[in-house]
Image (cartoon, rainbow, N blue to C red; front, side, top):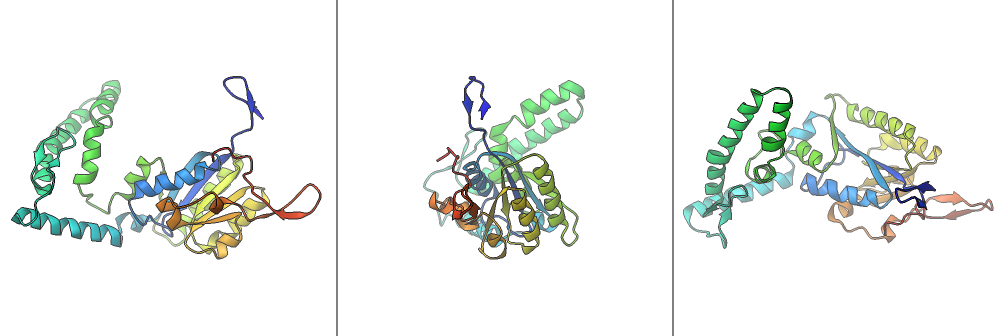
Length: 285
């Protein structure tokens, strides 16, 4: 029991850490939405105090099939709109100034010639400032310009990759790019788990199907730490965790309360074993 701000004693909120193996389990759709869906599930077990993802450089330059398909469809539609074969039901509207454009290509041209050019001027201006002036200018005109940032995400194609790291960071995920060496991401993730154990957390979420993490899960359970594996196959890792859930169902928001019941066998006060829910004190449902 802990005392809250109102002076009332209440059960201590459990702490949750999410570790994401991006090399093994990348998002199947938009990264921002996938990260938010994962965080939503983790919050059902307590307060998410840390959420981090690890991968080598290839994960950030690789273009998944769904990204390629989406870009092909957009190019085909742009050609049809330019030829006048397809007419949008509603005009394309600029998210910064509200200007209406007939085609998506017209909108991108308008954004690049006006807003992107103005943005570059502000960046050049910011570089000439120092100290507090630099910080205030950045907060007001660069990071604080939410309309531009939101519009740019949909109109400006990243030069490399598809914006995986930036979208995950936008969702509150700490993204760590490791060296392009075998098992580099695994070792970084294991080190983070050791750090998490020293912080006294209650639940560990592992997004991976890599069997190399079996020993890590065993040590976590020996430390009386609740473990949840998010993956595609309830096999090796799933057998060593308190709970296994489907990565597809997490991304699609299809998990139910029944899916989050731990199957771990626990010893009760009378010395008998029984199936129980490790998070019976959870009040988030």
